[in-house]
Image (cartoon, rainbow, N blue to C red; front, side, top):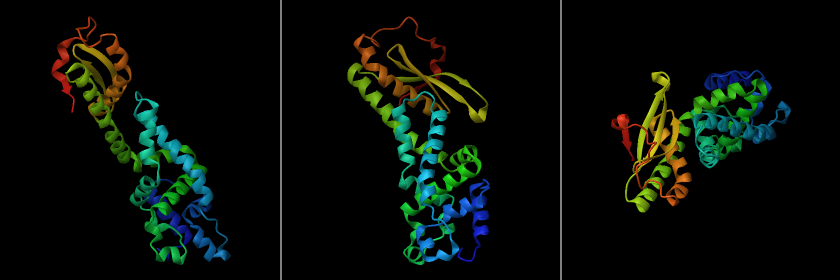
Length: 261
């Protein structure tokens, strides 16, 4: 990549990102490490530190937007934990490698020699700088497109990992207090086949507890389990889940019950 002109680097970056960066100067700045600036003062380039500072907030906001829309029923604590698993040095570096970004960076000779293109810290900073450049060039919409393109699998993995904790915690608590497992019932399905929304409720004994929605049965179950954990102590204190409830949903759909995993 050493023989590429600055303009060619920007074109290749845009091709890999799938978005256009209208301000070429910002794109070049995002790719420029301070060691390259120090070794090439005649080029009068700016390093990416200021864009990295700005882009940190851009990435956090964009990821928060997607989490907010993806998980409409989960509490703030869950969203915070998922974002924390994504927007940190290792997670950002992983995204930078998926683009890939490292071979496009302008590094000083020493930094390049000692494998700077592979360093998590350098890649994470560069990714944030690129997000900052995209935002300053074209606003938030293309930034959200980048999150959809490069973060979606990581969001699924992080959410799934945390979700298991909620279902496990609920199952353990209910078994300890009531000697029975919670059940998860699909209440409704809506939307086209490629983008269904599932509504699931938690049933303990004969009583229905929380309902939640998700883009998969598993996602909806996890959200409902989390909400049930919040309400369960009070409901148990009132003698809930010990007898059939008069407003329990019709049992015609019991064939669609999913036992907890």
